[in-house]
Image (tube, rainbow, N blue to C red):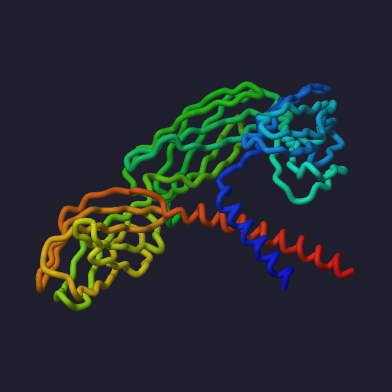
Length: 399
């Protein structure tokens, strides 16, 4: 029983600590990346900062994540010790590029900085589960001849125009004389909506260029799919992207009760409209009726899925027993897709009818479900690791 009690106290304390500090990350690295264009036998020492923004006393070990026989990579500062109130320390590594790499393209190497308790001795890289950050060394090795990659960005969107930007990277050893992009746009059901073509450009070896391509078209808000085909000096490259026009938008159009009788349970119909080109799931409302800041009634509708570009009624019930005839303040909150839309209204209650007027409001916040999910995942992972630790500790004591 003593062990079980200790375990539960430890679990509870750990959960509280994580929930309080879940948004605080006091351990960082800067810069996060070093990009190098390949030069045979190039040697360079790179410095980076280990940041201790929470001013914790800690030990940090630094090592190369994976050994690569083609690359000479040495960490010059394998260990750092921070005392309380130290902001940052400088670390460094030295790399030596080979005469050539076996494969062209992007080669990435990770230098890991891992925090360990100050009373733990460091042996090799076996430091157990702890917080780690990563600095990346990226080496761009050119392709022989002509070789290009393409990216597609969407700079601005509205319901009348989409501004595409085609990014062309010449990763070959030769100049590209003529390159242009063709963008095909598809709707949510994979129907082709149109195409747009960029102008032509030339690109020197190792450089990149951007070409804009506006697409004028009247389309609904929603998610769309674009396929880019880059044509350059007899070769092609492709890139695909899902992009968004506008944002998910559900509106409250009307609230009414067909057979209202004061003193009975009233059924309310809340008419909502989905202006998004995809179905929005789990849409519901919460209606508050008050007088002088005091709550008179509150009722929530059932959750419904609203099909794309469609209207649907949500249903809610209110027990009006004890409610008097008169005018009241009302506020309805519409919940969908991690958003909350609130509308302030006035409601007039009589013996055989109820009406709502003065719809005003906008999106006022986020549900926060993603944040709660993230915190939950962290808690579960830590508890699993803690369970294994306690299990082995008890097992060793029995031995």
